[in-house]
Length: 259
Image (cartoon, rainbow, N blue to C red; front, side, top):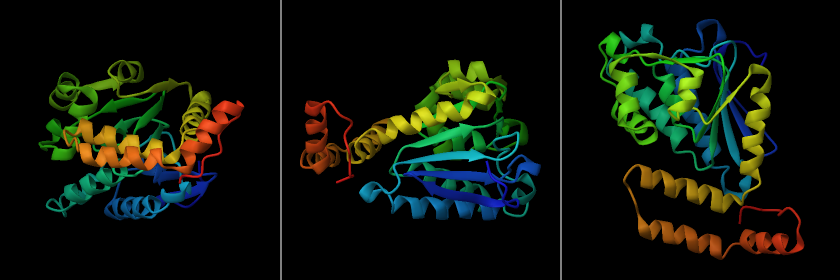
């Protein structure tokens, strides 16, 4: 995906799609403290580009044969109090992005990185990948928001299976339990991801981003009817709704502006 020297995650924006790339392939893209800070900084910058549809969708991926080995455990001993909190904050920042996110799982995923991928709205993985959450085998009690994401997205039974048994699951099982939305051969991975990118960009940004937020609030048990009504009203008064109706009547693709 990139030829840049190894280091913190990279971010590139083109045609309304931002790609964040984990970039430590020699160490299976393990996440150091500076990587977590870089992820948060990228998310903060991208959040400001949702208005006006400058960025419509974000793809999270990695270099090398693995997606990510999770938090750098060598830093855990020196940073046991704030390290996990920083990791949780970085993953929460991915989840909180206002536009849809796609995790392009180019390889296997372990530890905290399983939650990093789960924080994305969609996950597409290669058919050779595996997943393992070894927290119990390390003596770690996982952080609260990660447990919430696992249960709300995969269900209690799957979450217990992954956390308490520390099973290593192959790609086809990850698809079956709903961790993956799509499974692809290596040579088809980019085409599958691009299909999702195109589908998201075909929608009206105000509607897509608003419904993403509302759906996430419902999943978290934070249903706010007034806030949802405000999003409904904003879309109802939008230029994009009028364009969508006109395009439908004229049988042509709509040209949405995010307003």
